[in-house]
Length: 409
Image (cartoon, helix red, strand yellow):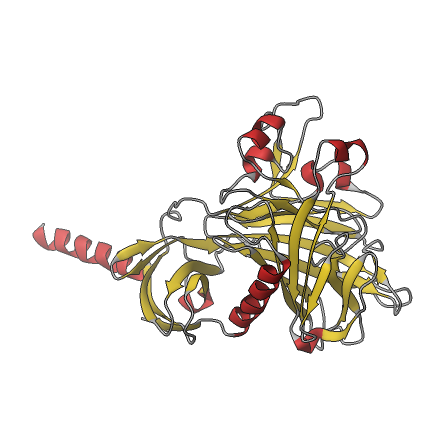
């Protein structure tokens, strides 16, 4: 009987060992500047097993982390966490991956929502329908059906929404204080919330790029995403460490006479960040296609460019129209975009609508980064000079990232 019990215990231990995979991640800062909330991402393909939960520690202290299923097959593809690394510092994180359990819960630093609202209900958060994704076919415009006109997402510093129509414009929400607000205000704060210090919409977009929307290019001007068979918005993850939202445009014809292409666009925002990475993937290499992106030319704005892929503006304008301008003051914002030089075909001269770029790719992918601030922030920037100085620093950090080394055990 004792031998049987011993065999059972040994078998149980073997199962527990096989159900766990360990690794160490070494993070190094190659610069003298502090890197706060630097994203660390681990590809879980190397784990060789399905990962259900993870534990990340630094010097024995648990660090918040997040598991993400990026392709919707119910298998987690990436683990991510944030590191605070001093200049020229090196840190070693120990990670345990398990086939069992559920992801640990941590305080949320990001959030996202895609939702339908019952128009007969005027109380926030009552009878709303929260969606994981929504797909519409050609001829259907969900812009007025989906609340805040499309998916919304945020960190403690910033919040954005993406219009669910042929524009796919990135619109902006300015915060007064660092906090997650979209679940409370749903991009439209009421008078009481405004009195309490909540933020509000701070940008008028129209047909502009807003903050970095990707469009087609016909040789003279941008073209909208009108010729599309199916259009999808999807929330891939909404925290606690990062939020990822995805747009899919199936069989899009960017320019008349060209073959259709499938395009997938992902926006990723990490906790503690005011910037957002934009990753675009096509169903095949598209070296012969031209695209356009850039920034809205905010009314009366000044412009900054380093002529090497970094561009910004600072200006003040109404974020609303008509009678609303009587009760809403002008909003002052700073916008920025950084595009790797390998993608830039030309930097277009400013026009009344946009500060634009023509871009392309020799492969099936395009990457760039967008960032903004609102003058109403009690934690941000309040002049064009300060904003442009930040943009230069931001670009430098993007081009000199932390170094991540992964050792599987």
